[in-house]
Length: 409
Image (cartoon, rainbow, N blue to C red; front, side):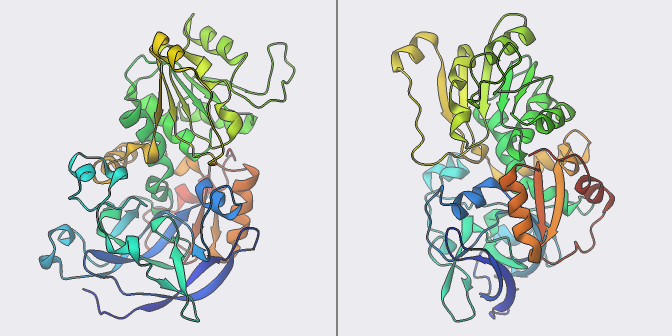
């Protein structure tokens, strides 16, 4: 139950493009009705966070970023008996936190389209964060997870079983949810389909694992970094390709998934192109030529969020004649309350490797190092531990092994 009083927390505050992020003491308001306060145990760094920091995406400042997290319930906005949605939550419960907020009542929510919710949710209008001087701070991407605590809407949290590693499970808040959902919800990949995944970061590896679980074959992982391609093979890719290489073994220097990649795919399939091409990175070059990798009836699924100035030039008549389609996939068209528990089940059964995707961990004070790793493309996922350690984590071995494992982006 909420005490009605806010708390002082530590948070990584970003005050403008090109301005280093600083750790500040800030005020976090108490949770209101239908909201919960969560101690953040782990928050992965997503490239979306950096797209605001480097100006790729426009935003107002100052803000607290971080949206791919796990934690433990500290406070509930109302007595559980007063709100059916809160009955299954108790103080101390471990949870996954997602950026997707849903009202449950709008047309989109009633149709199961969580990512398109248009309902009236209090936190959409008022951030729970203010700085030491009382000035408002934006709750970046609806979470503000690079902080010791957060207040989020009940719809953003999913309870976790007690035996699930909280560092590994943080990836379920965005990266794995987005990548796997693009395969299962958006593309609806079926057994025997040919899948090409462009970009082998956290979202791409999540897509590759989901394609493997769906029975897709072959699964071709495309990335210019050899470490990333090698890592993709360990998660379920059957073939890999370097988009910058030419058929003679040289380099095109173009960084685009076209040209010789069609030959790689047809060799892997025995003669046909891809049923699904998923572009999981926002790099503009990744889209160049991607649609040419599709077989008739094929789907280009745009998962990564490029800048607003990036466009695709394609003739509608050509799409129609070849029965090809271009699909957007925001957050994997996820249904948080359905998809996250399903992913947890896969993880607990050993079918979905989350710990292996965690390349490194950092304290909140070292968050700039975490950002730099992602900017360089050194990691599959790097995870920030805002409180320094993960309390009561059922297994530290997986996180520690992953932190020293192969880097991949």
